[in-house]
Image (cartoon, rainbow, N blue to C red):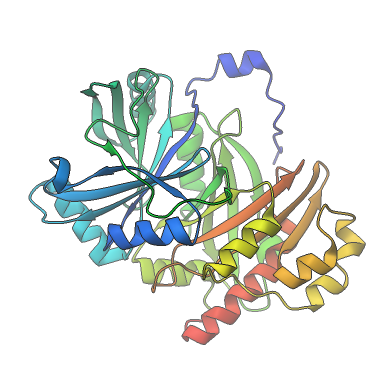
Length: 380
C-alpha cells in the first residue's frame, strides 16, 4: 500500500470533492447526561459551554456541550421519548450502553457534501435543513456509517451562537484549570470480521478520504489475540478515522470483546491531542481517571529504539506513557481504561512531535495491557 503524507498540494486540496473543515463534535448518547457532564468537566478538564433541556424548550432530551480547545463533546440523554429520535437514543443506550452516536464533521457546504455522499453510495439519514436563531443559521445533514453511528455534516460559517440553535450558553460546572488537551486527533471504529475493507471503501468513495496507514498480521498481534486496522483521512489530515476488525487468533481479541459488549460495531476510542502529556496525565490521574498499566520491562529498552524525546524515559516509566518513532518524528501516548461499566469506549491522550503515525511500535505492549484487563473481566 502506498502511504500518503501530510504534504497535500494546495491545488489538490482545492479540487477535493468532499472538503472538510475538521471534526465538529463527538456526540454521545448516555444514561445520565448531567452526571456525565460533571465527569468530563472534572476528570477531563473540559468546560461546559452550552445546554439544551426542559428549561429552554427541549422536553424530550437534555444535552450538555463541553469543549477543550477545538475538541467538542455533546452528551445527550432522553428525559421522555416521544419522537422517533428520542426512541432511537433511548434504545441506543439500552442496547449499547453509553456510546458515540454521531461523529459530526464540519464542512464548508453541507448541501454539496450531502449530495456528493449520497450520489457516491452513502445512506442518507437526514436531508439538508436549516436551523436559525438570533445568532444566525446552521445547515445540517446526516449520513449513516458503521453500526448505528452517523456523520452529521455541519455548516456553521453563518452562525455565532454557543453550539446550535436550540442551545443556550451555560456556565462551567467547575471552574476549568489548565487545558488538558486541545483537539480531537482521531476517532477509531470497530467493525465486524470481514467488514474493515468495506468501510475503508465507503470512506474512499463517499467522502474522498485516502488511505493513510495499514496494520495487518504481526504488526498488530500478541500471543493470544490479533486484529487488523486501516486508517482513512481527509486530504488535510484534520479528520482521521482508523477502522479495526478482529482477526482469527487463539483467544478473544479486544475487538471481539468490544463487539460483544457493545452489541455491534461502533466507536471504540477517541484520541485527544495534548501539548503536554505529562501535565495532562498527572492532572487526570489526580482527578480519578484510570489508565492502562505498562510493565517496567517496556521501558528498559525503550531508549534504544525510540531515541531522545522531550520527556525523560524515567518520567515516561513513572506515568506509564508509551513512546514511538517513525521516519517523520516521534509521539507519546497513553490510553485510559473504559470510562463506563461496559468494556467499550475509552480514550487516548497523544502528544505528537512530527510523527503522523498511531504508535505501531506500541501495539504489542498496548494489546497485552488490554488483555490483562480482559482477563480480569473474564473475557479473554
